Image (cartoon, rainbow, N blue to C red; front, side, top):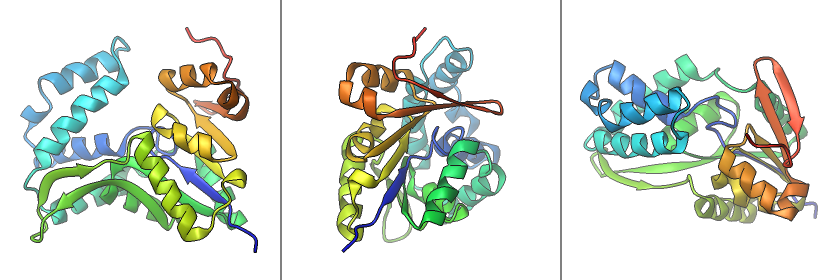
Length: 242
């Protein structure tokens, strides 16, 4: 019996040109679900450093996630879903041309297209639906029996969690990983790259690029795509890092 071929996609920085969680946070502030004071202090400071390229994006995102989770405590799932729907309606087209075309390519080929993202599952699900993807995993934001967010999160942004998710999908769909594809942009996607026969890094973060340069197997295996303005470049892991 012929096994299925899968295409595993990260979202933030891979399909989407920013972070769905960041967009959700900003819209929660805009609609006054979250007080503007949640943005002040460390989050604003880290964002300013990132925006002026004097700081690290991962530091900014880490601070934001911590503030985001704390701010969402005691929110209803209904309210979170309402803003999530607005995010996808207003921002859902902000995607890379390359990965949008690859999504369509794999869907037309009849491959099992699967999104695995560290963003909240209620955002990931809506983004997946917009692009015709049935299967997905996102960080799970736990709600109690009254539909209220407890503050507990089961993450899907790390390599270990993504590896486990891929294993579950392989069992469910009888997937041939050697012929499958993986698309990502950070070190959290390394296990996807190691498992799939075809690995593509989209605008890779510096930490990921350094990992690829040091790992001979991955250096020879992973294709690197850089999309800037209206140009798509293919480069090698041996590219100089300035």
